[in-house]
Length: 155
Image (cartoon, rainbow, N blue to C red):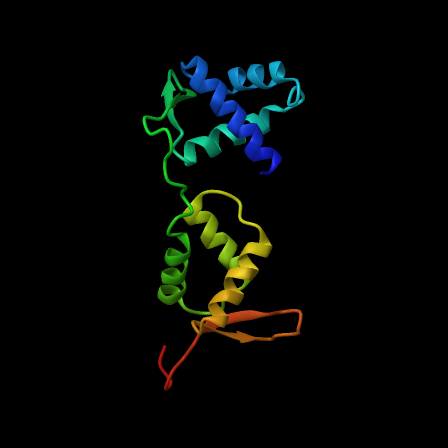
């Protein structure tokens, strides 16, 4: 488990114990009392709250133009990455063209709403090539890209 995952799990556990709406300021207070994450900054707390909301543990809301989060009704929602790989393959087939790790990461970010590591994008493209969906071009050169595999001159 990464440090961010552990920190977010801790925040969620505290919120479930004490309930009520949570703002960035409240999340910072929770982290300050934890000891281990007492130096957590405002941007990190915001990122943690957004991630928990993206995973449906928290529900974003607004009051008088100020954002806060409430606990979601489902205690263990499905992770948003489920089905993303299939959606990515559909995007590749629909859009066509040259696919690089950068283009995959942008599409993946649009689908997931969160950062995707370059290594994960590279692995995903290599897996699609191995499975016969994509052709590789420029292997061993600085500019490697993939295109849809063509059979009999068709996609």
